[in-house]
Length: 336
Ligand code: ATP
Ligand code: LTN
Image (cartoon, rainbow, N blue to C red; front, top):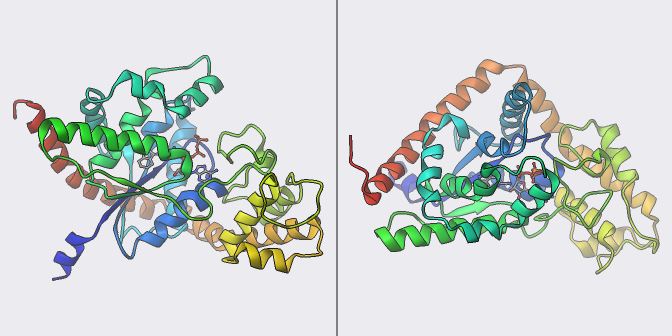
């Protein structure tokens, strides 16, 4: 009975790159949502280390960051008993799906991807083919698990649409093979901006670390970063067009305290930005403190982490293998 109920649950898939330290933007835009979906859905989450190598990585650092990112998503509340949590390169089907789906993706559609254009501009000496076909690997991640919903930040919307288009195209040619996935974006927090340049997204690869709050930053650092956040000269805590810095801080405060924008405006009416920035910093530091503690406990138990990611990869591979087999059959690959 319980098994049947499990089977009917909708499937969630999402991934995060171990390309740097996980930020408050990653957390509020994606990872926090992942944990909240675990009760209602069948959730599958991956540390997408294969995506991370589209930008140059130091091998030792990539290994370390992959383990850290895995520990961090567990520390944020991903329960490896309830969800499947695995490391992308451990499940070979991802590389295979990537090739098959690349042959169902057009050069023209990949050329339109804004992330490719942004990252090529940032890394002009390494515009590699992987960076170009990045969205195909991502489509494979999603489609291999017959995913219904993909919880991501708004920056991933275009990639998600490509995954849908590829699924629809493949289904059109070969009959129903893939579930066509939908995006799942948080109402508040889908686009957290840099604290130093609130017109830009907070990003792991921001060269200015003061603009970026990392989940594992100690409380003093968090307070300092919020204190130096860029605002405006109006000195009024209100959510309005053109007040990018304050809007961003209000969004962050709302995400971690659950207060609405109206409540925040009321609470801080007549108070200066200094008070508000200190309050946001404190609220974020308080919210992240238990995650930091849990992370330290997990990193001290490597054997446990290893057992979790091994089991996760086995479970993921079973599901992905079934889809890949179906795909190969439909394409016309002679079975062994
Ligand atoms: P990089 O800077 O290396 O491209 P990133 O910080 O964009 O990395 P990813 O690993 O690519 O992080 O993304 C993980 C998840 O976090 C994705 O769902 C993405 O949409 C979300 N995300 C990233 N940055 C933000 C942000 N500033 N606000 C909200 N969500 C975000
Ligand atoms: N491109 C994503 C990471 C990612 C992903 C996925 C997200 C890789 N594969 C599958 C959702 C589903 C990003 O966050 N930059």
